[in-house]
Length: 305
Ligand SMILES: C[S@@+](CC[C@H](N)C(=O)[O-])C[C@H]1O[C@@H](n2cnc3c(N)ncnc32)[C@H](O)[C@@H]1O
Image (tube, rainbow, N blue to C red; front, top):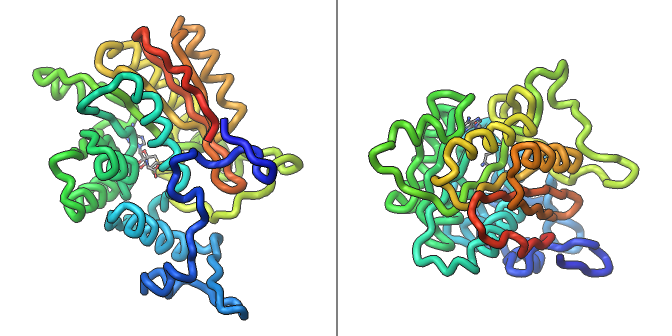
């Protein structure tokens, strides 16, 4: 757990964005980013996190500046924030470190149009990634992003034919090549598509946690599913029971704190006991993550980032 006095929980200690970027310098260097910046009277640039176009250019610029990744997003699709994605990758690095692996194979469940987790994992760590995605335009953009960055040898996108499936379609289609994976990761569709007003769901206690800085981005198809993130992660758990041998460490992120005990209970009911949780922090935004394994490995390097 990382604590300092001003921010009770800070970013992962290895997160390159832990030191706030100098946006004025970056605006001078990156013209597309410069176009969406606002100039203050003192000559410093200001970023309007509530503007979607600004967030797009900001994430593109940060991926280029810090990881030499050139990424584009499908129109109207989710624009990922880099800090949280990076915290997740760094936590996976920590979970895998003790295993001293020479090659790592991972599965990115719902890679989005950016394919951000797989691109970061491949570029930063040379991990071999299988990216699963169900939305057609996201599959196309994800493949273009991989190609644009010359990462075809490391990242494969599989078009998920059935949104109810997690691993099943791919594992059944590739049963001859029954490879094993060291981890899976997931940023699940968050909202419940069965709710009368899915996007109105209150995810935070306003008295204790201030409103997020960022505008929400992404289409209903990307952000909702039947039963929201709880049912999505329950499906990952159900399929993990079918394919215990295929993945060493199963993980998923969760957007709502109250959903963590629900998932822990679900795991417990299924007698999955090798479990850990963590937190990711970016400004006023907190996310939770959960990991479980059927193997006798130590997951309890647990930290809050
Ligand atoms: C919340 S978005 C996350 C996108 C990206 N990973 C990120 O963090 O920016 C969830 C993604 O999962 C995809 N998806 C939903 N159900 C899926 C399924 N059963 N298999 C694969 N992808 C799925 C959606 O289309 C969407 O792109």
